[in-house]
Length: 182
Ligand code: SF4
Image (cartoon, rainbow, N blue to C red; front, side, top):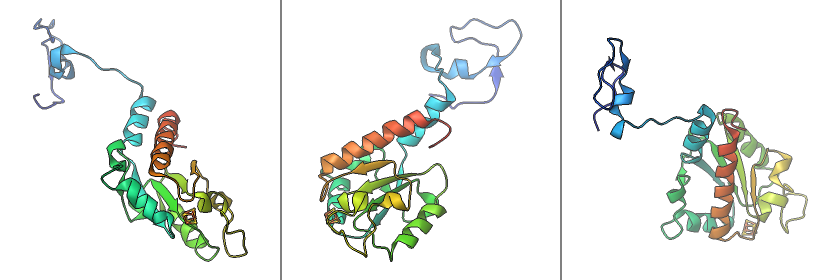
């Protein structure tokens, strides 16, 4: 396919010549003269949901299951959502994996605040969702007490299939958000 050009031409896709006025060359460049039209919201949602950059905030045993979901057998990246970025400024999904103590909670919140919008949060495993069986003075009883959570993935630990299901639910949510991004 020839490179797209901002230049204009007076030739139509079917070979007809224009009446001396230029028409956008985009019409000419598309295969078979086809034309694609969409809404900006739909295009943005589509692009965002298949280019998720995760920041994995991993603290405990759920990390093993996270690695399993990300590795070749389950291959999270085939959904366009598995590329980890260990900088909050380059990530748009905060994947919180494992038990969150009150001591580490301010760090988690600071990382969330450093991420640029639009951004999303997944609570991975029952410890992040509710504190799990750590019903004690040192554990945050659900990260939604300190962050807005978009998807909860239950389980101790969650199976990789559940992780992939949660990820696809998040992608559906992103698609519906459009330009707002939340
Ligand atoms: S949910 Fe279970 S596997 Fe995951 S961090 Fe908590 S105790 Fe560990």
